[in-house]
Amino acid sequence: MAKFKIVPLSKNYADKIRSTKQDDFGHEVIEQVATGHGPCRISLKPFVPGKDRRLLFSHSPFEIDNAFNQPGPVFIFADDVEEYKDVYRFPPEIKADKEHFHLTLIGYDTDQQMVFTHLVSDDEIDELISKTFNEHPEVKYLHARSAEACCYICKIERV
Image (cartoon, rainbow, N blue to C red; front, side, top):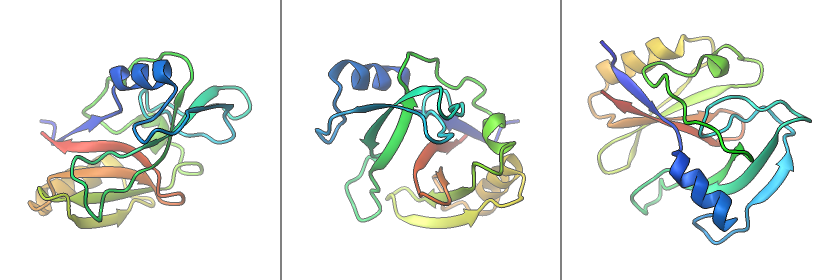
């Protein structure tokens, strides 16, 4: 039985960003050729540097405005893509590429206070997520973030 669910940015949210060409902070969305692997925050698929076109904008994955509300840069494919569908396992293309995706899991409680952090390193991330939810009842949800740039990748909810 699944212990968690991956929550990418929604297709509807991406459609709004693409149509208005502005993020929720009033910043202009920037279109560029990928210089890094990303990933896209909707499909959770890596970019092909030098080939794929992507959109850069500011995003906050939080609902409460407090000290832990960390808005930051995220990327999505410039063209329309489907949301990540295999939501009961961490995206295999990300977890298989440890060279380009150094990950940190950050846990938050119901008041959106940071209560858990773990550098994924060589851990099997699906097992680590399940273990975290089993051993830390105070963690309401997790964020997967880049351990290098601290950029938000996706939300991980308890099931």
